[in-house]
Image (cartoon, rainbow, N blue to C red):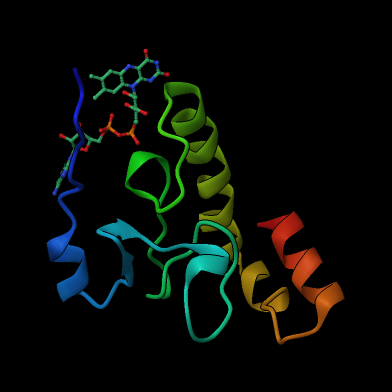
Length: 100
Ligand SMILES: Cc1cc2nc3c(=O)[nH]c(=O)nc-3n(C[C@H](O)[C@H](O)[C@H](O)COP(=O)(O)OP(=O)(O)OC[C@H]3O[C@@H](n4cnc5c(N)ncnc54)[C@H](O)[C@@H]3O)c2cc1C
């Protein structure tokens, strides 16, 4: 019987990464300035898989999220994320979610 699992994320909190119930907040779960999907509250830090808040916690999901997060990292380093950074505008937010 699996009665639960606790993510080992305290060290991330020390680095300023927002956690929700011990899991890493990403995308729309981050409070404060809007960030793209898979991005955390700390610029340049991304999360995917079981450690992410609201993760589905399945192998296929973790692999898929890993690929999507890698694209988000690419967008971040190529500057695309800044171009698509949400500014409260709905259309911009939708574009941001699409490209991230
Ligand atoms: C008992 C059990 C049964 C499951 N059965 C199924 C199933 O039948 N089908 C299914 O689809 N999913 C199942 N799952 C879920 C599936 O295993 C997870 O969703 C998947 O492994 C998540 O992948 P991940 O890469 O996000 O995390 P993980 O597979 O947990 O990988 C995280 C890795 O990071 C390492 N790590 C942690 N902290 C640090 C650190 N500070 N520095 C460096 N490395 C670190 C860990 O050692 C680990 O190797 C099961 C899970 C459990 C626990």
